[in-house]
Length: 270
Ligand SMILES: C[S@@+](CC[C@H](N)C(=O)[O-])C[C@H]1O[C@@H](n2cnc3c(N)ncnc32)[C@H](O)[C@@H]1O
Image (cartoon, rainbow, N blue to C red; front, side, top):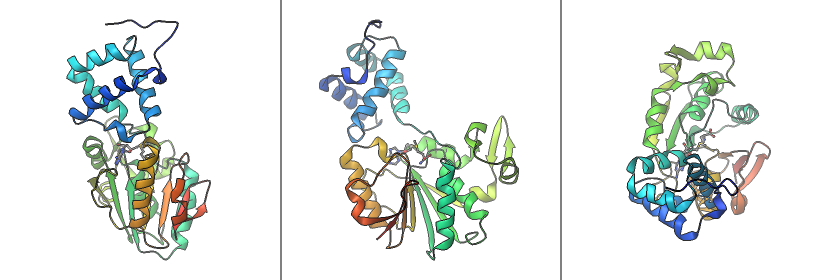
């Protein structure tokens, strides 16, 4: 096993194509993340960070480790599946969205695509329950590619840091204390329907009126981002709404959508 050379720690751009492909094959064979669909620079950066954490000198010793140790393959797969989220992530986005939804006359079937631990769809549930114009009129779907994170989402258990954007009053009204953390109340939990769905697979996309797909596309390569955006356009009716993460853009799919609030990445299907 190599040791890290202090003058040149291994970084993402040090990967040879062969080594990167070999890691991809090991992960795919073990049923892990299919890295060829993801932004290569971003994936390489994260694998390089793992190599440095293990104090290895580079890709070759790490490949030897992956070939010998199924646990490390599992660990790497989990590390590459980023499930970071919070309730009301980017609060101004949800404030703008609430206003748009109240003004619109859409039937209300909403989809949080790439929902991680449920923070985003449960935020939608809180928003609907606490907005008289929306209360009781909304169906919320939530999907993720990861069955493990969906199990967690269904339980509705949350740790305090994920609630940093939730006021104490809303916390008391909508969550129960559970062990060291909290659990979203049963009646709110029941309003979200979770299902496993891979945006990059051929599985059909549900027909919905609003799609939130935030901080998911940024992990895909440009071709797959375009494909997914085209499928979102097909899943939405004219007037339907799409919300992306603040670091994400419509790329070449801009022709399908009119901007409603560019800063908050809220768009309307034309
Ligand atoms: C950073 S989280 C974003 C969570 C939430 N949308 C938010 O903005 O806080 C990205 C989520 O996308 C999911 N994801 C990654 N690839 C996916 C795919 N191909 N299909 C569906 N979900 C995917 C990951 O499992 C992860 O839970």
